[in-house]
Image (cartoon, rainbow, N blue to C red):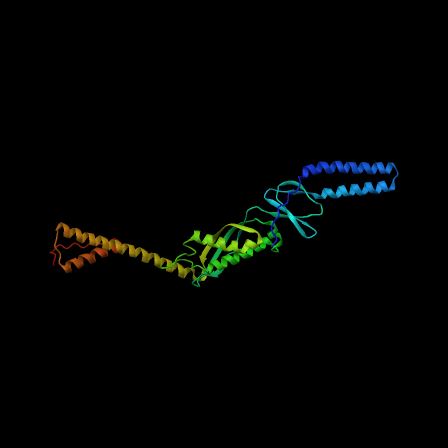
Length: 289
């Protein structure tokens, strides 16, 4: 694999002064050769002037958070990272590579989770180039490579985890966003390592059931919520009934037989577990009529 080699190139400002002086001297040499009517001198002076003109092509600009990959006749020479006006061999091919932080949002992918349920998922990937040589020479188009490999990693991750957890299950796409984000980032990084790309962050930006099963899954979620709420209500009601019976017995307010105790428990549970406020019926007779 081709690794990045940082190349130190001289400042362009000093070269501008040097080339200006050389250019003026070359023009003056042409003038002197013409005045002296020396054919060989004229040719030499013109060649020198052309050479100085070619040297001007070595000036190039490196912007902040940008690098220039230098090649000489197809051979990688190095990467200039120092920002500002620079000068290098005019025969170098200078290819710009941005090292700024960039982000990419995948399209909404329709995949099956680990249980086979169809879902829609999309992610945002924040990345940057850390090795310019690998980005330029190891893959054909590193930006397209990032897009394709990110979507491939997201698709693979979606088939590994369920959409939401059930009893006895651990990590799920909806309930564990931090763990899923870390797993997604690692999977994308493993795929982009060869292209000199560093993945800074990867997070799911869209997650939903596919439209064809969304309504059924919504009803299942509502049923699960109702069951959970009812479980809590019944647990609380049983605790309150137990407390009431314990207090009655402790204070010796009334001594109920098993039949009347069962009736009291039934009435209390109806009152406590009912969706609406219970309407009491007052018994004006005796306890046993």
